[in-house]
Image (cartoon, rainbow, N blue to C red; front, side, top):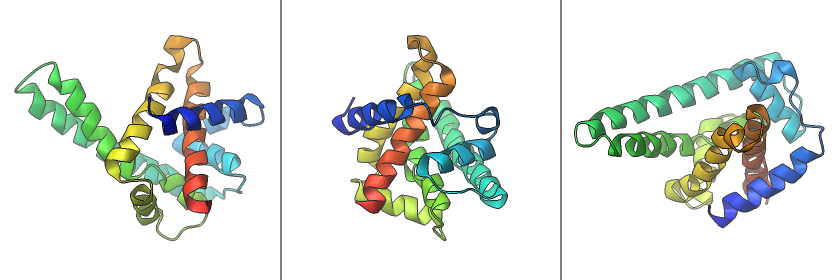
Length: 172
């Protein structure tokens, strides 16, 4: 795990351990709820319209990233069964990296959160640098239940790590 991912996850774990960011049931059942939870993490109010827009942006981001992953998987599968999962992950996270900051930017009222996310990706060192941080954060999120963390808590800590990173980049 790279140093930035380690630092962000440690800070997110410490912040989440305070208990005030435990998700309410309506915050982890839908993408709109996830947007609301990130609003609480950023300490900004989230209107119904913003929650809906956040849900749409998240759905779009994950559908496009998933499609890129599936296409890469299928192409790699023609060459090697073992290369297919790696191709999926690298393609998925190449796309995911571009939109990693889209919800925090939306929640802060940025007119074009996708453009702002890409600008912050460039500021953070570019796609490969962001992937080197995002992939360990995602691994933490996805493997939480396998290592004794709850799935929702592991997911929230990963999202909080991204929120903390966004604050560093956007607000110095």
